[in-house]
Length: 217
Ligand code: G3P
Image (cartoon, rainbow, N blue to C red; front, side):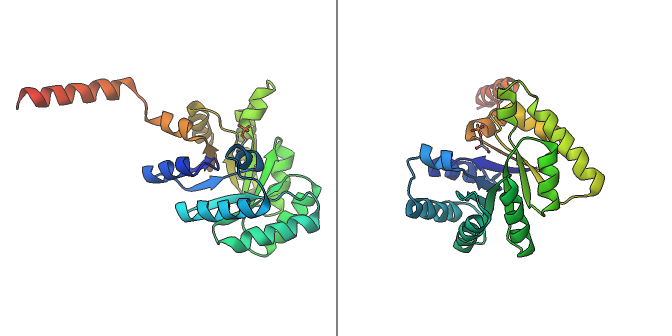
């Protein structure tokens, strides 16, 4: 399972990269705004800075909602660095743009996915990644994890190569459940990733090992 961090915060990206388990970064306009990164030039510079910090894929989202605009913005983003994955909303023109970029060998991430039908279209358009938002489904009393399971089944039925990128991951248990269901990638906050480290028996066991070592010295 690939681990992406879902943030535009450079310190958190550095911290996740230093752990040695990071495979990439996802961002969106809201995450950029949260870090105070606004305006096209600043956003572009921020993508460049993120690419310098990590080795893997970095999703950069288009703002345009029409085909021509998405193609223009996506091409500009893709030209920044080979690590850039063009992130497109799953709307009609987004699917058309996805097919355009897939045919050109440019990686894509279809975002704002909330149904199996949308995921099927993304796969048919040759998307590199499809991003079902599990937390936002949970927010409206709908089982987000069930969507991961359904997309996995459909993709397996036909051997689609599009990777299921579980997004809107909110906590550690989401990561574990996504792994059990066979999501190819998860993107979540640093706190959710670090939660995987925690076990009280590890802490108790380590404290005892250290205490016993001291006794013998
Ligand atoms: O990966 C998608 C993500 O950025 C949305 O997460 O927590 O705003 O639903 P959230």
